Length: 169
Image (spheres, rainbow, N blue to C red):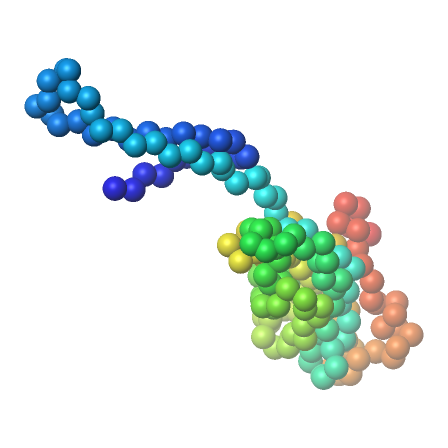
């Protein structure tokens, strides 16, 4: 027999009892009873998103380098809020997963993204259990020249940058 209890409060002690009684038993017969006490786990929030997300022209033609500051305030395992991997989003659509908690970058091929290159990149953290953080800061994707040759470094610096998600600037 399995029972799933729902709606329990975090960090609370509960007692569960199970009684058996034969349907034909008379009222004086005492049913068999077993109890168990347990305490629910504390409430664990979502992991923090990474910070300082930046996007720049990648090391090879047709690539983008997405970098970030990994989440360093990791709770001790086996906490469910510990970062397990990073999810990369282009214009709100999940495009890649980086399966290391200590990762700080990924190189993306533009040809793998879609016909239209993305405008914005965000990164989220993911726990082993599948909980996902909120978005990181929004980073604007730099544009290359029509020939596919990256612009000179001075122009690249003007194109690079992050966008404040609250103002869009």
